[in-house]
Length: 323
Image 1: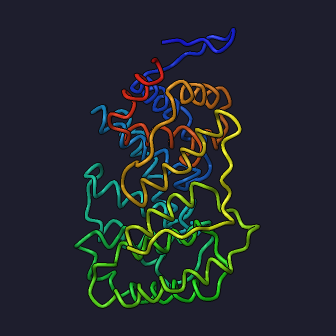
Image 2: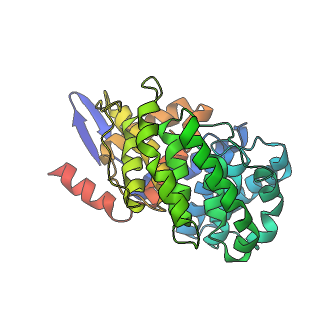
């Protein structure tokens, strides 16, 4: 399908066509990506290719993803501990693939060395979000490992308590900590500690540096997490509420929100941008072909994962755009 924008004809791809284009491009170029991380590197590409292989029942994409996984597993313990582009993010990715039965193995065995390296001590690690908190929340879902990993819960709650009281934090890092609280809130003996941590939030808001980056998508995630904790919705005057300045900004803001939704809530809550905008975005990424154009954070792998998670939203978007 094509649409007119002034004198320029704009191709508007279908959902499955976009997914196929993304998968074929990533299959060709994945091996040239040097970063091994989840958000900006090979792990995110691997996650998309595995899920796309399951979506299409095409082993060719799964074989490429498997080769990427084999290469990453050889160097995992040399990676930094963080989540965005470190070991915690790789462990999270593998844990998700195991839980979805896309790859085989027992999480307690496959992830044992990664667990030991990530949880060697409870501390902050590099990145915008607290990788240990997000990874521990994911690993606690595995019943075969939960008894062993439960010993880290108290230490993580203590770390979050201390950080909320004393550290200057971005909203994105706070969100990762709130996500951990959501994941353990129904466990015995932790409700009082969570209530105490939440009581610190007003003072944390007062300390937040207005110069720190707190984009609108982080506020959106923040309110959703607070709602899951029954903590209400605060008004944060320092938050930027600017509108996207161009079409690509809209798609990139969507992708930055989408990967957080998929990590924290397991699905998309927001709507896809118009298919014509997504098609234009994909065309530009395929013409550029820089490493970041392939990634989850702002590139093709992120768009592919969002499309796979979008269910029937594509059809309604297309119908509304054509009216």
